[in-house]
Image (cartoon, rainbow, N blue to C red; front, top):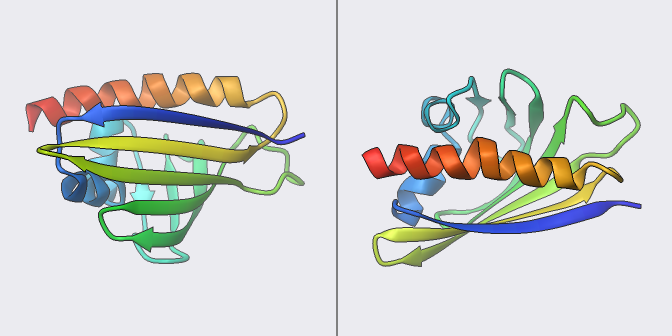
Length: 131
């Protein structure tokens, strides 16, 4: 049975700048403090955390939503990609980022929840506060 999770965080950055940073190899590498390579086009491939995470950009609504096909090296070869939806909501000069991660292989969602909090949300808070 597939699993899913939903997380939100408020970040001290405009939705436009957060959206652009997510799809930019250099900025993504800086806010995660790990190497990311991103082709910011539809069907463009990406990798993060030195290849631990890989996937493809599926859909964009500029400054509002990014949809990606997403997987890690922990997926079995026969597992289909999970789906990552990032929703950017303007809140004055801040952004509420809601992350909906679905179609996760059974038994892995709790680990990814911790990963999103520890390796994305916390470093992003720190990174965007400095900007």
